[in-house]
Length: 263
Length: 296
Image (cartoon, rainbow over all chains, first blue to last red; front, side):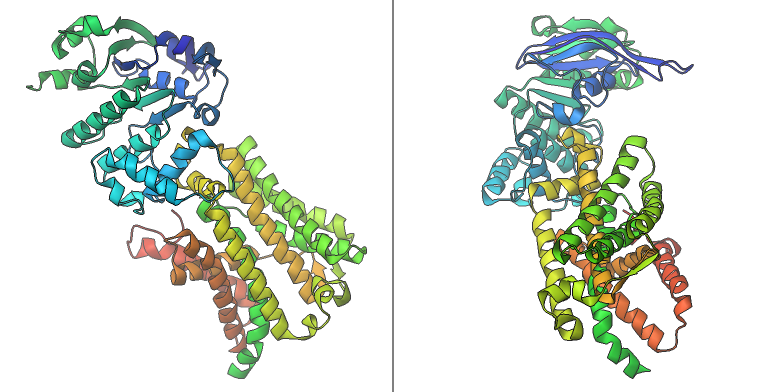
């Protein structure tokens, strides 16, 4: 159970360019729920994700993860419970390190670090197993330097890294937006597969209404730094992309374009 | 002329093995943390001066050298703290620490230079024969450099060592993987400058005196050594990356010795070394290749 209450974040506070990014977000996510966060540009979606991850600390409000108040915990401490996949494939992996080194770093997110050997046969076996589930052939390329992988492969690796140790909260920040449509589908399907298998509590920011409708169990709509609508799974059934756009009068070029595209 | 060079090969080798620690100290923050550090110009003389002061005050050379190493680590950590908490660029933070270190060194020794008699040195404590025989010095320092190199390779293969590389490879990713960037920058800078201080302490005990000016120019020399080493050994794996400064140092100091033996004016040396570093920095831009040799 993830509870965020009254999350408020103002950038450049006290200056003329002060920007209210989130104006008091209240959101409770039950364990195992897959929540899609949608909304126009500047609605506060990414800020919400950054607040939950601890990249920014909120000005007001509290964040509780399974009974632990993490509000004041910096990002690297919160990472024991929160895993994240970035939109930019360059951000989510360490390009100059190998696939297995990246996975080892991800494994240590939950386990901590010591002066033990980083790469062991047992770990390699574990990596091979978790990568083979992605069906992208990465399990054959443990020793490959990540900078030689494609964007889709890097995002798949980021997915494997985020879920190697099941986090209490998985944050997906438009993680398929930078990929071509086919790869985007592959990575999305792999994501949904892993999330369902491990029953991960997931928050996914997306501009893809179709993904939100098809994969999420709940859709949260943000506008001007607040949650303005919350659609549960029962209500979601039967809604189409057009309904969503119409219902929320989304003023977002990207969403409108996707709606206009023939299905 | 060539005879002069050949006669100088052993003594140059001893020198280059000691300065290999400086090249390592430059490489560690620069390559594995992607954060350049200038503190070596201060931590090398700090190590030398602390060792000289302690040894002449009667402390045994083992403890004296160990304390000198710790002083260097402290200087590196100070640079890291200034960079991390006051958001001073790492280069400027290093210049500040190195500059302030000058005054500290004068305080530590109470004079600008200090003789360290051979009988007080680490080498004499091991065996009085060492400082009299250049071959023994080569063997001993060669073994020491190898041991440190193997230790560093082993360290970089541990979880903490790999995490250090992660901080350099992707600073934005590190906190998302539960890594405190601050902690690892402090570890890396401390480790690097401990090595530079070790070099300072060894220089003092081989040449028999410490001088507050002994750090002048070591950064550019070390950088030149690193560039040469990386050109030969490469940097595709962490083992190569760690071996590069050692190999580079050995070759660089022989090249300098060759230059001096063939009539190069010693006072022109810093200009030439600087020009060499500059050319290797500029070459990829001039020839239009996208990847710079130095840089990321």
